[in-house]
Length: 230
Image (cartoon, rainbow, N blue to C red; front, side, top):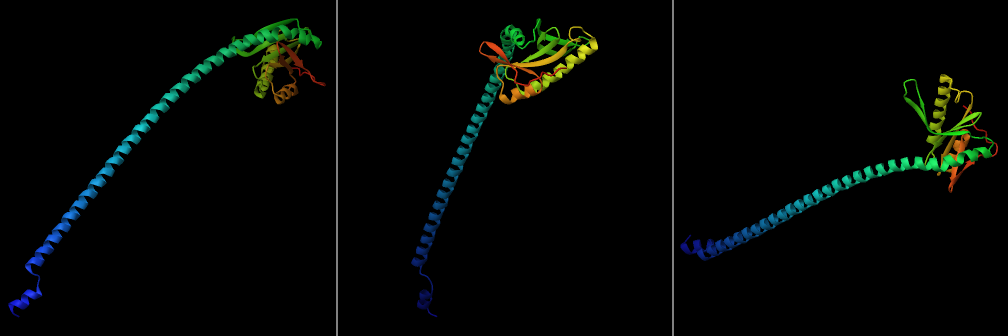
């Protein structure tokens, strides 16, 4: 093969140089593209990091707000408990003023003439430990009526008063106290708020049902009602 044939079979210098330049340009473009992509990736990572920090900040803010809300709720509950306690004390005074002065006349109209009314009567054992407390203890010549007063009467209050009268009966039998030993023991419940269902429950238990009406009280005695005796 001669020199002319060898040159035509391979790439010439100019062609080789052009190919080299094209390859170099392509590599440079690829490098720039890779750099731009890397920068874009870094930017997105940075944005994600900023977003994560903002999310953490918001989570921290919510956590702090939650703590403050809990603190305010605890404070409000404490204040509510305090006011409810005061209300309970005031209700005792209210019951004394509403129920007490009217109760003798109301029972008198039923033929049960009350001779005396004892408030906050406490039953104690031999060691002076309180066994039960009775809001109003009404005394007549032949009966003693223990009255429980509530702001709103519930069935559980009726059940508790039954147990209270059982304590009163045992105490009277054990002490042979003439105060109640020779008299019938009856029960009554009084409240300004009584649902029909709870009212029937109290009457079925054999209790007088004392209801507030305006500035006075009435005793609900349905036809056929017979008070239970302990």
